[in-house]
Amino acid sequence: MSTSVETGQLLRTALYDYHVSHGGKMVEYAGWEMPLHYGSILEEHNQVRRSGGMFDVSHMGRLRFGGKDARKFLDHVCTRQIVDMTPGAVRYSIVCNPAGGCHDDVLVYKLGEHDFYMVCNAANRLKLVKHFNDVKSERGFVFKMEDETQSTAMIAIQGPKVMGLMGGFSREVAALKRYRFVEKNLILAKVMISRTGYTGEDGVEVILPARFVNKALDMMLGQNEAMETIKPTGLGARDSLRLEASMALYGHEIDEERDPWSAGVQFAIKLDKGVEHPEAGRFIGQDALENIAKNGTRQKLAGLELEGKRSARQGMKVMIGGKDAGVVTSGCLSPTLGKAIAMAYVEPAHTAVGTAVQIDLGKVTAEAKVVPMPFYKAPPST
Image (cartoon, rainbow, N blue to C red; front, top):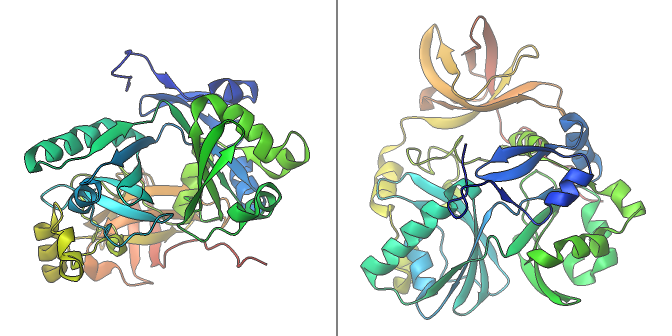
């Protein structure tokens, strides 16, 4: 069981009492006590798809960077271009190791000329803090890094009715473009509200001081009518939602051994940023990623649809003609589609849509075929 380095005990978010009072089934996740569900993963999944759900994502790491070399440092550790970001922008990026594997995938927020924010995965926060401090020392970068994970809270509100609800709270928030954020004063606290998402649905993420999060929820969602639109949602539905949307999860689709090209997140790589902006320089892992871009990958992430209702699980073998051809990274019985779906690493020659494969489920084998990703796309907003 993962525990807090500081106390030797599982950490609790500022919304722990809220989860318990709403019937949350609390489980250990990356050193934190988090709600798996509040009664039914299926109902919570469908609630998000048809209306909206509120996720406590305060366990995710939140790091603040400031100082004259903050931007240079981030361009050095991130695969995505940081130098041309404008205040209010958010960018998805990978933090790579020298071999091109993924230390983590992160979101970078630009606050000001020398001020940035980063959201990272809970399981990788301490690893990244050490990595960043090592790079800072080795390269002589001058900046300050603050870990604000435990002093702040973060909630994600996702679903087709969310932005309409946000319009009643703030026109500025309702008008946010995707991958932008705004800072607002809410009573005694400054809050940062972004529009990114990890469910395939529209919505917002809110970062604010931990001591104000319960009051902020009351203000933003109200007590009665709004809570019928937005209901608390746990980690179980979050996983099935992101899988339907074909979004990578660290420890499944990406890890220290997998490169972004193989994982299908090559959009987060900018190999020529040092050409367009010489001051950006080269990033850690760039040599390895340039070699992969030139010579190709050994395996590629593919979407699979299985016959029948049995789900594939991480680590199960993908086979063609009785021979190993890959491995499943994530799988579930899709509540929205009513089909068993999975993502898997497969040899590139077998990733064409329609390719027939088999999944070793243990005692039985399931027929499957390669299908386009994402498995699910939200209908256009009306």
